[in-house]
Image 1: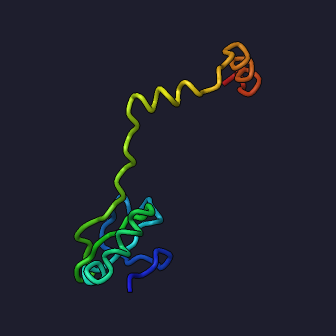
Image 2: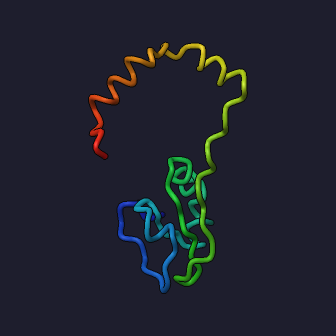
Length: 102
């Protein structure tokens, strides 16, 4: 069965940006990917990055796709429902919250 993401990941020579900066990166062997592909894809769909290994060597990385963007009509519909902003009050709030000497 595929190792859950909370188990310690394998260590590899060299470093990769994802391994060094993301805690939700796990290793899966090619055999586990073949035998439990659906479970691995479900983990990726939930946001996890999976490194595929062959004989303990990383050979590929499965990453979630970025969410699809909104079209112009959806953005305009959201914009129309935003609350109005009184810019004088907003500026006064900023002035109170921020140190002017910075």
